[in-house]
Length: 474
Image 1 (cartoon, rainbow, N blue to C red):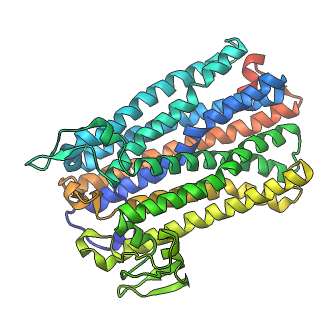
Image 2 (image 1 turned 90 degrees about the vertical axis):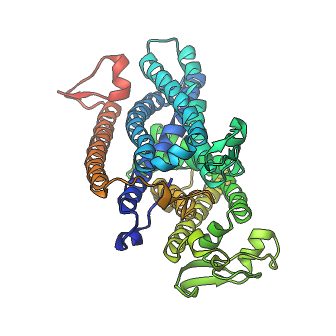
Image 3 (image 1 turned 30 degrees about the vertical axis):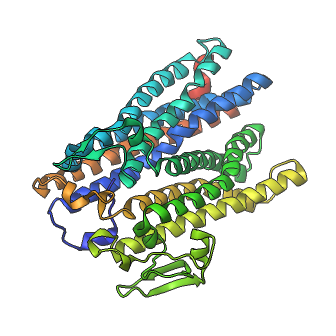
């Protein structure tokens, strides 16, 4: 999944279609990943909330679950559109890669396709089944959705991890894969850490994002059970996973150190191979390898990478300039990596605050500063997940398939005018999608609030329809 640095806009690229192709791919990837956390994790939150409602005979929990199911269905529809476009882009923008490696690369997308159809079918059943199926039957059918979402993410990660650590085949005399081993192509060296790192990130992001909505309501004085429950369940999920993600991220970074040393050098802006390598917090690398505007922590990078300050870390100069990220790419990767780690660290601090308050008061934290942080945690989680994708994709440059095919060799040789036209059209289409998606969610919120407040002068919908959509203005 080739990505683009903003600095590349200033430079001419050869072949001519490379620049608009990378711009388009980077934009659609960044756009689509916004929808993925809720697509994968919101079904679990919804079904858990429904279970709470049924077990405790709690109408507030059931109301939350039903409303979340509406958001789940709407974002799934939008995600289906952007995900489909993204899949077609591989064939349109990078036909040489697909033509050469499609037999292996396509395995993950095949799995993702099956998961998509399974999820689509059961989202329809789940949404339509409210008040039409026995409550316990409806609840049990809902449990198909969380594993279906995880299976779809698994398919995508199969493809991405294969691009980072290609395996499961041999190269024939013509450079094409032969003797494809399906299991080897699926379970590549990068799959384990990439999959768990992404899944935990998706669930963390969804948990903090949903909780942030109710944190804002809490700050506005809405401190009823509806907002307390709507905040507590998703925030607890995000808080539990935050320290887990710290451990997984450490394992993943060390795996990159072992398997993709050029990417690791870019992440840590390491210019020369050396032991006692410092960890740079912030900083920008110059063309001569010197670093400015950063804080070095002596020997920490070597210690983290190999558990010893004497661990040797390869620098960018250890690799042929045509086989490593450029200085610009390295700076972009390093800053993205720092943003991801920094925001993850802030999430852990919020988690500790939350845990200490619960241990001391058996209640939510009493400070509005905590809820201000929680209200920002959703957006912060999305920034972190975008930064993680930048680290993964830009760090692999200049390879589209690591050590086997460069991005320049994979791009469509078509006249770049056609790519620019397609990119411009997509910008308009995606802007329209975003407008209607956000508008719909903004329209639902006040209707739900009116339903909760029971304002006079409103015409209520039928009871079986009122819960998800709220009252309709008279």
